[in-house]
Length: 167
Image (cartoon, rainbow, N blue to C red; front, side):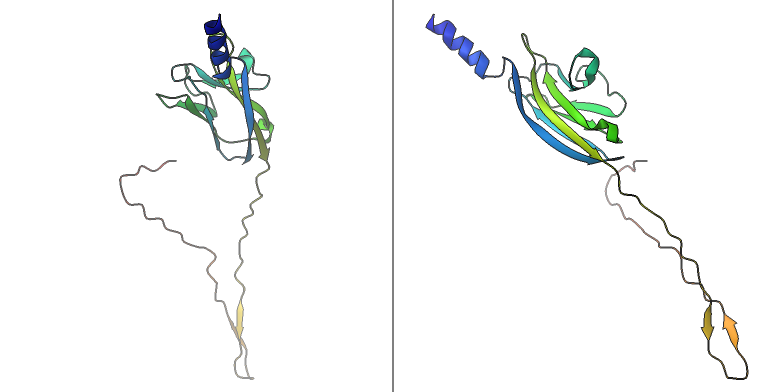
């Protein structure tokens, strides 16, 4: 009987029982990307998934047994219970509560993630208009000349090594 009690206690304390760990708060900006790292004990071969609250079957956005889905992708790390979820092209409507979940024999284990997406900063492009420059001449006559200022900036990037550009 003591053995049975010890085994049941170990199972409950090791993450095989109902478990929802303290949450992670993540902030992102519209049109940006975020990556969430989730770690669960005793989960190296279990199915991992990421879902939106309330995390029923229809709320699963991506899982380790399927290909990436739209803006959501999940990457597992063999040998441990760690996995990452990346969300691209964030939208304000993505704000809310999510769950990193792991399939278990009895009850799945979860890690809560709270995502807050804020508006992207407005970026304005202003174009400078060249203005004519007046040069003083002898009092007998006045002449004007037009000297346009450069209205562009040239940036260059040098890449060394075996890197493929991403478009």
